[in-house]
Length: 411
Image: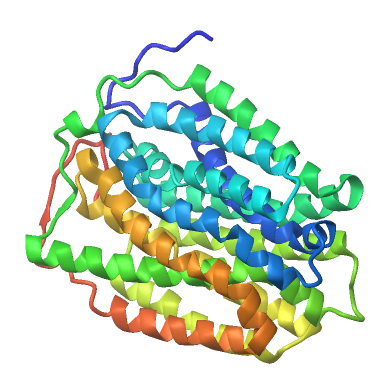
């Protein structure tokens, strides 16, 4: 395919490239959750009595999703972000096709683990690539977060329909085609980079003293780990939660998938609102407010059923999804673009690797203690996150880097 001429770093990405970068985020989260959305049907096909016993076979994807972020971020900075995004799209397509062809639980686990390795590319590469030319990074990250969580919604919706009409293998095969098409379009529309990010000289907008920068990155890593724990517990468990709590009300898998997709779609729009606010208000008080709101809603969801559970679940996902943009926005503000993918990769490896425990623990935890205890445990995690976010340093002693109008603007 023919390539467009290279763009200078002063130009924003063309609209097709921005769209494909956002679709890539949707693909990343959608593909990681297809297994969780179809696990009950796959368990029956592979001879498992309970879905909870099959759930740990998906943990490899989430471990590699975290650990793979370190080499992915390094390659993004030193080799090039465009090249790594092509590896992402084509790798996701191939690994999902392998999952569709799996004949046993262990074969499926291997395919999912490979997919997790390719999925690890997006966050340390795709998001820095998107915001490196954005005049409003908060808004760009908010829209990107919306796209990612619409992928979560689509996973719940499309997987339910594909499983019901064509079987669980189609739930992996059809998304594989989507990733392949996106990779071909990205190859065509995204211009070659003029230089690898590591060779650039652009400084971060907010220059914190080294001691405060280390503290900020430590707080962000811990907050990111807890946020991803909540994200993995909910997005991997909400489907079975609704099956359990909607018994006698709605039991059709496709209808429950539509209801769950609506929860994620509503929650996803919170990221756009938060992203817009982050371009205008101070980070720390807004972050504290979002995390604090999670606690009573998670406690409410722990004991409600039916439609009251549905209302509580919407509230939970609004504030869980709403907490996600903070991490990327602060990295954009505090970290130079030439090392941003590597810093993001290191942070993601710790936070996502740790939060992969949620996928491994989910089935046994629910089987032993139930969803009510799980949601109370998540409320406790939010309380811990609140305490750590209070340690986030203020910017009052920071140096604000003045940048051209077409570069990142101060929040």
